[in-house]
Image 1 (cartoon, rainbow, N blue to C red):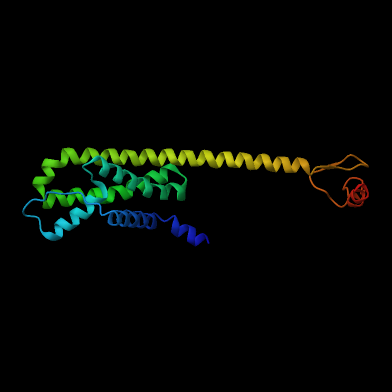
Image 2 (image 1 turned 180 degrees about the vertical axis):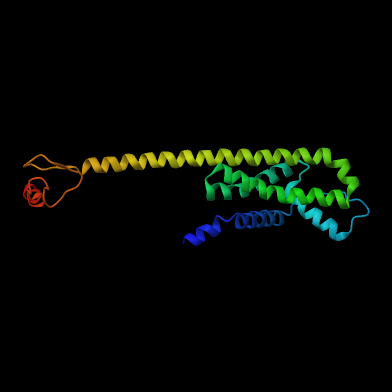
Length: 199
């Protein structure tokens, strides 16, 4: 069981799950960001750049909403697994960095005209989306921790209430117990017998 938890909490496994979910959702909704490639870019290069662009780029409001919803969904995975804002935002930014880095590297090498013309418009979108992921990671982790803390407080209060309800005082010597023992350890009075007589 501990080994399974370690595997689930492995950053590589979380990364693969996040990328897999992103890929499936992009494919399912047939999302496609149009890149106007330079004439010199080969078909293989265009396919790689296009796939990477679909993970992070948008040009209309509805596409912006789709990308933000997409990343919000995958951002929840490390948030719920770790419930730690540092680990959550580190994991989310690592996953976010991967398609961004390779998109810009491949685009600058294989489609330099499009890259130099559009970089001032593309990069701010990337930056804002990255900041959005950090805010989500911090915010949701904080909310979950608050919720867990309030549940813990309620649970502790319930335990105290139960403990108070099952308190018993020996009628012979006045010794208090947090349970119903068979005998009073102080005066050896048989408490169980006494209780059954009272009932």
